[in-house]
Length: 301
Ligand code: NAD
Image (tube, rainbow, N blue to C red; front, top):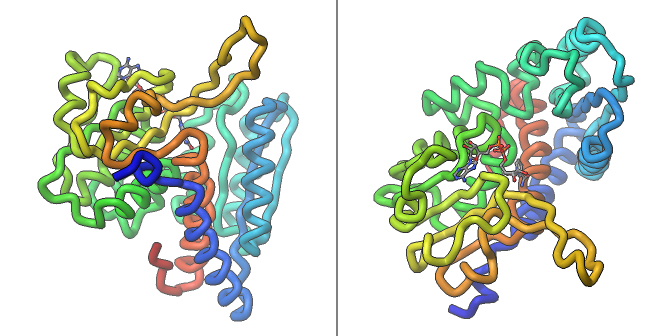
């Protein structure tokens, strides 16, 4: 296999997910149901502003009702909680997303847990975490980044990972832990590695699938990888290429892509890998919420 065909474009797979979301939404709209996504942002964090804008734009492209609540930095926790209570009650809103991080005076966990589990399209509510953790994947809203990573894994290996060893590097609630639960539900034998893991290289080396979600640029090298393994690189790290020659900063993953390419079976690039899948799965989760709220069968991706 040439190296070019080893690269799995998340962008291309995300486009097919979005096409499906759009065509299903068209059908729903003809039945009088318009999926609605409300995005709430507090404060002026520039990166968060960019994320919220792109989520709103994508929701519009999908044919959703797209609602944005931009609140001032000094908004109180109780004001935010009452906005969420009103969105929970609003039947035109099927998905609610609160952009994190929130300002320090607001308890983010309290806010996230106040979202109705039925509208929790980020999949962070304990009810959805519990459903995923008990293997009730179809009933859960699964966090978008691991959900998107799982779609990519299924593209390469199919839905049943019986007999395969998977290593997830990172144990965050947003990526690592839900990722491990999805792999387990697909019958993989799963190891979760983290900052306290000893001999990470040899732990990774036995894996048929590595999902790297660490936040350390190019940490995973080719000699950590079993020949032919599938590598899903979740990491997004901004590095300054070469300050001496004044080159601009750029994004790299947690895997040393150029070094790994000769060893891997398949690898996702950064950018253009897991990133586009994350936003596509947010749209998929919103569509799912709209279907379930209206007693319709949930869409299959
Ligand atoms: P996090 O900081 O919450 O978690 C990082 C994890 O990495 C921790 O569990 C920690 O134990 C582990 N870790 C840290 N150093 C390690 C080391 N030396 N060896 C092994 N494990 C180590 O981060 P997160 O929110 O899970 O995100 C991880 C990465 O994924 C970041 O680069 C983030 O930007 C990226 N991310 C990408 C997307 C996307 O859409 N592509 C979405 C979310 C996060």
